[in-house]
Image 1 (cartoon, helix red, strand yellow):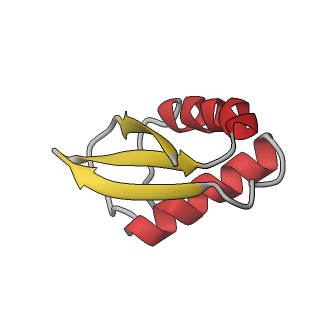
Image 2: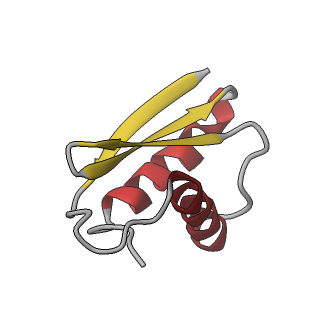
Length: 82
């Protein structure tokens, strides 16, 4: 499985989302803006130094373009908070 990591900017000083909420938000935003979420693609989220780190895992090289677009989408976010 291939993965790529991206640290989301912004402070977690506001009410932070849970890992699951953030992963669901990434999937939802990607599905709305890019197209259907690939079946074998996974979002892994963990906190790192006051920010969220997002890893996108996938097993099919045909999904690389979709993954790149998801990473660009997540990088454009200042922060994911409620």
